[in-house]
Image (cartoon, rainbow, N blue to C red):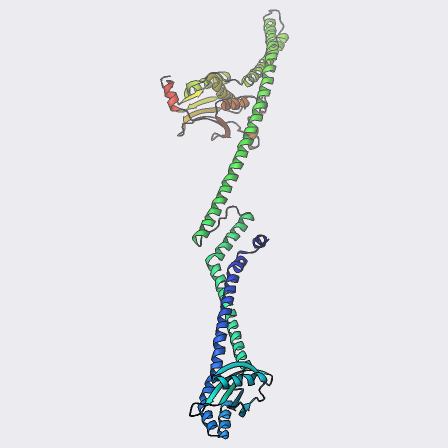
Length: 498
């Protein structure tokens, strides 16, 4: 239960409970014992004052009593009574009869007993007793004549209340001093705690509050004593670790999402590839038969010109469909052959020769790159197909007059291919969809939208990347980046001698 209560207290409250309160209690106990000792000393000192007064008038009173000068005795007692510290003064003869008295009279029975004890014993005696209802301190002193015999007794009294009032005043003063000292010491301890540790703990709490409020980049200042600075450093290290962990989690989630997207895309591409391959295979036979029949019909010498034109149109449409079937077959292959080392410039030049035969002199092709070019580890037929598709894509806009293909070896040993043209380019809103299957911007009806999808698939088969950008010639540009080439593996395979 006590632990639960402490858990709800602040550090300052715990300091008060565990340090200041025990300290004040210890001070109070020590002060109480000290005050009791002082009270006994003061009380003894006040009693000693009465004794000193009695001793001071003892000899004159004894001499006056011996000479029967009772007036002198009374005068001596009067002089004592005027001191102000005496409540009463009494003189008795050797038989205990009161001869002179100043102050309170009519001593009680207990006083008479004390008187007899002093007269019989001849010794001084002090005791507390009651005279006329007042509690007093009485001091009895025997009186001796010149021969040394007891001839009487002197009694001096003082109110006990005088002693108690003095002691009470002393107590009040001591308690007031103790309270002031306790307040001062408590304030000094609390102020010292705040200066030494409290303000730094407050700073740590404020820093944690700011972090909890959303300031994740805030860090606690590592000032103050070594232990508090270590605590702040540990807190900052924990926050840094949390940030790193959150970043790692986000990065893993992002990577996982990318992998899932790639997996879905691969499954989608595989399904579309199977469908495209099957469709192309089924269409290949009928198209070949139609084209063959049209060719044989055109060999008939008696064919009319109208029929000849119709058959030529049929063959043209069949050729167009054959192009579509070829693209479907390319998209549906999806299986890479054997990789080997091949020079980048040879791949680019071979691809340009193939496309140049299809386009004729209307389009200018420019090859740019180091010769001999860097070696790449690829399936040459598949990768050349990717370059051919990019070159064909550049020439199919109908407004392209210049196509450039470049190759280079980056500092990081990545091999980069770029195909650029001066055509109309690719609009920004369709760039994210440019590599999707069957997506096409062509208006001539001959493009199935599979050419760039095939390129994207081939580049991914080679662990590379491809992206579209705006060419400096005003048209579209495509950049293929193949992963860093292993120079040691290249030398071991003897590719430098190819």
